[in-house]
Image (cartoon, rainbow, N blue to C red; front, side, top):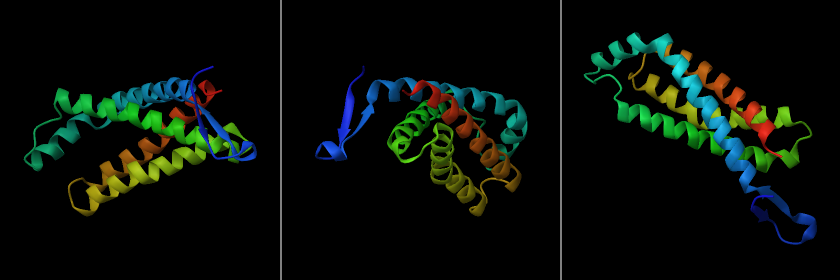
Length: 150
C-alpha cells in the first residue's frame, strides 16, 4: 500500500487517504482532461485565433499549451484528492465523483470563464462552449479516475 495521509485525532476520528492512489488516479484524470483539451482545439481553433487577434494577442504558443497541459494534471490531482476526502461522506463512488467535479468546475472553470465574459475578453459563445466542455471533461475525468482510487 502507498503512503497514507492520516487526518483527525483519536482512532474513531481517523481518516486515511492513500497518497499513492491519489497520484495514480490523479494522473489518469489529468490525462483525460488533456485529451479533452486536445479534442476541443479543432472545435474552436481558428475562431479562437481570430478572437485573440482582435485583442491584439498572438495565437497560443507551445509554452502556453504546455502550461495548460500542466494545469490539466494539477486539476486531475485536485479532483482525485478531493474525491479521496469526500469518499467517506457519500455512499456511491459515482455520486462522490460527480459532486467533486461540480465543485472544481464552479471554482476553477465557471468562475474564470464568466470573468472573461464580464470583462469582454471572450465572446459569450466561447464561454458557453468552454464551460459546458469543461464540466463534461471534469465529470469524465473524475468518474474514470475514481475507478483507479482504491
